[in-house]
Length: 493
Image (cartoon, helix red, strand yellow):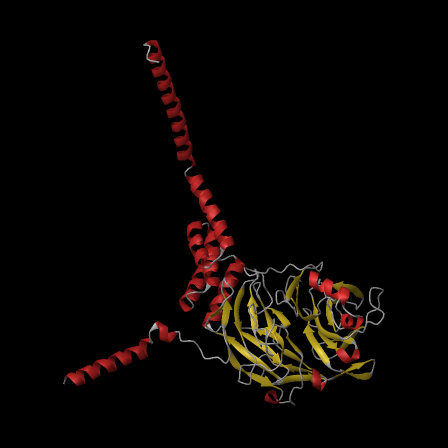
């Protein structure tokens, strides 16, 4: 009888768990992913985190009813949701519907003055705000401008200018267009910067040159190196850009491969000056800690950047297949992705885009577009960053607190809450969360404001106390002097 009763109780508890859900720890069990998900703490140590994005499958040419992609190198998404793939090895642009279930059209030829023309290794592609399709037609040394349906409009040819080297070769790799229809082109071997063309195709100059800092050792080495050794190095040559995107305000986001792993993305204003913020670790270069041996050692090699929204942007590392996402202040939000043969990992990642809640990565090794969907953890971080960007600090606090329930040691969340309280004027609470977030800079700001407020709130009492003390000192001094006078008169002194 007791066994039967005990069994009934166990079954009742099990039924309750099924109805209302398992305990919180079980409910928040991490989703299995084929890659590491982590971030860096204040000490720059790697800390494991829940997954911000999980694999959602992949799409190749055969999946959508055409021939397989061949070494695709770039893709973009129009405002209508169509996805344009630069199928480089097949000399064509493949246009997919927004759900990537079918091919809407294939652009492999176009008519110019009655004659048929073709692409040769179209490497980059973008859609401008006014709906024009720009194709970096690499082997033909030009940028072709078409309608979204593939009708020819004009062409941007090799620039002619005195500022260009005599042996300059125009090999466009990536292209983007800002709100004023200025055309920005990354050309192979153009270390001086990004090439800028006006809307009519007139070349206006270089943009955003990356300065290279030369160490004392490198200067000493070049002094004694042979001519051949010097020619085999690029110590004095600026870094070549690898990827490009533009935000709604006209700022250009450009990625590059940084040999030091410190800065692999730039936010260039209309004057070409870098105004990117670098966050607490002063690093927007991908992985902070890296090995020194093996194929995957050394700094991240960033090959593309995508501006998302609310100040956030993501960069793509081809070396370890990582995707790093930062907020406007340069804080590293989360990391996911990896190199491998499992579903959800890459062979040769080359380009990255955002499509609604999904992150898309073009893999030239697998010849597919990989899809990743945000988890609850990723959604909370994205929402919190967006709310802070919009100035809604109250709602941001609630989102960050939810992040802490999933990842209790998340310094980013503690700092996010601290900044929200700081903006709201609650300096004492801000100090508490900045301490948890190991944020010395903002803790100092909160402390000074807290101290100043305490002084301001009690200034009346402090001044009254000072006056009382001064008055008391005067009275005591007079009493002492009076006693001394009496003592002199009585002959005691």
